Amino acid sequence: MDDHVNKEAKLTIDRTQEIQTATQEQKHAMREISISISSINQITESLGISSDNLSSNAEKTSKMAEELKAKVDFFTVGTA
Image (cartoon, rainbow, N blue to C red; front, side, top):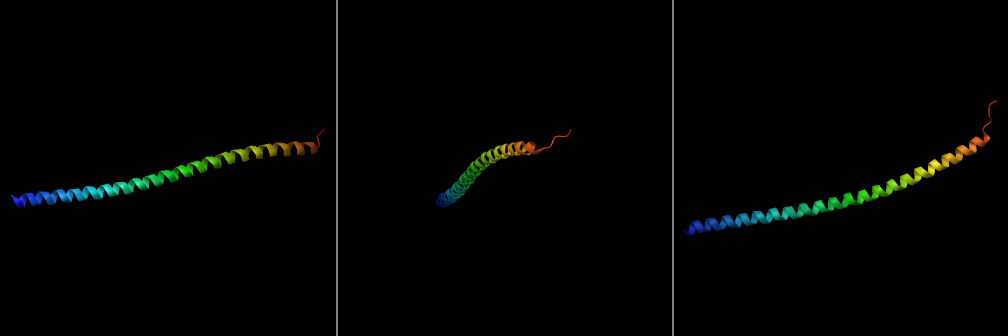
């Protein structure tokens, strides 16, 4: 009887340790996921800012091209 109780107690302790190990592994994995999500968030914000800057620069370039065309058109000799 004592032998059976000891085996069951050892089995319970072993399972408890397995659960504790698995819990620690999950905790570590959750930290890694959190770090990854934070990195993705920072990259997304950076891409948004870059996209806004690119759009602004494209508008400025387009306006400069229109101004340049108008200046070049001034010097264009018409054909008769």
